[in-house]
Image (tube, rainbow, N blue to C red; front, side):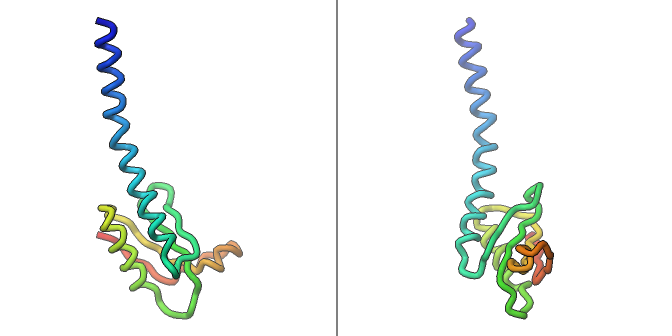
Amino acid sequence: MKKISYLFLSMSFFCFLFPLTSYSDKYDDALKEIESEKLVVSASWGVTNSSLFVGVRDNGTARDGYAQYICLLLSDYKINDVIVHIMDGIAIGYGKHKELGKSVCP
């Protein structure tokens, strides 16, 4: 009887962990793809994965369209309800925060 109980508990434990693993993997995979973009200097998730901060070089243009493009990439990973902030990647290195564009992903 104890063998069956241990087997059941261990199977339940792994079934519980699997969705958490795949949940975090999609965020990691999406971040890797975004970091591989030519324009991106750095990228990181906010504390709760509800915000994504993408650092690019400031060329003087608004980057709202690029933020919308990042939303499209996130939708490929079925990641929704995220605010994408396109930041000046060089200014971040100096401790300053300059937002160049923003988009709310549906």
